[in-house]
Length: 305
Ligand SMILES: Nc1nc2c(ncn2[C@@H]2O[C@H](COP(=O)(O)OP(=O)(O)OP(=O)(O)O)[C@@H](O)[C@H]2O)c(=O)[nH]1
Ligand SMILES: [Zn+2]
Image 1 (cartoon, rainbow, N blue to C red):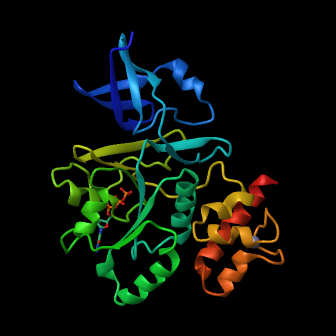
Image 2 (cartoon, helix red, strand yellow; image 1 turned 180 degrees about the vertical axis):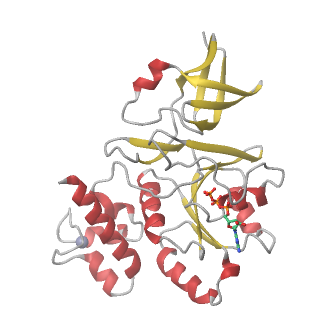
Image 3 (cartoon, rainbow, N blue to C red; image 1 turned 45 degrees about the vertical axis):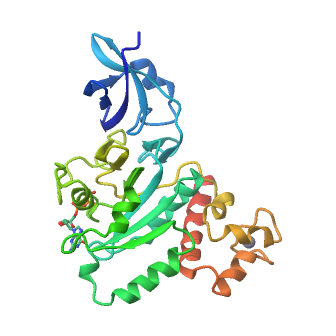
């Protein structure tokens, strides 16, 4: 008998917190459900709507159909995916311009996944107060992402007020916040929700620590209808379920050129009459993004052998 429905707002291992009409309830996953979706390390994820049953302990008995999901390849298991969130309106990738420096490969891999899942993607670059020639950096970032991201924001999260453009970005949406450890995700959440208990500069539970089944994500409510799902402690992002031949379809700036290649499955690496390579040479596609494409392509190809 279904008792109640709710939204998963927190997960640590197989323990879940669910927002319901009766407040936040804590539940476990029913064994049967745990086995159902063996292709994923975690069949229920933050952002899921679930049914709860009360048989001795409160358990999640069913997961509602998802609008979408966002996942990466599970660490330590090449064939499994690890869900990071479900039912999101947008992915917001946070990077710091210094300490740690921008990891373009991480951003680009997340962006490929977002394209594959058809999720809009926005980029926030923090710690602008730590660089001297901000204009050069902004040019570099825009050269890479003006054509491929839905929006780009450069911010200083510690010594100036949060720009209205950032507040507007989150307003009325379910956002998945991702980014490497230490880039300022918690600081951003604290700016948006001053009363939040989120800890800055401390990562208590890490996605990439210990066994690959360890997973932790938390949904923070900014206002009714405005939610942010945080994924603390991420250290890498490997693509799940993307094949090398289709990779260029998930580089947004390459898509308009794909029909111009001689071969329909052109890899844009060595083939003659390649419209993508021509666009790179003409300066229409960023050289850095193309080089990133090549790295990811080689990586995917090596795993297909
Ligand atoms: N100078 C400067 N420091 C910042 C800025 N944003 C965040 N920080 C600092 O960077 C450190 C890490 O910030 P967090 O918000 O904890 O980073 P996080 O992304 O949540 O890290 P994890 O929880 O490990 O994933 C803290 O000491 C922050 O005060 C910024 O814009 N400028
Ligand atoms: Zn080509």
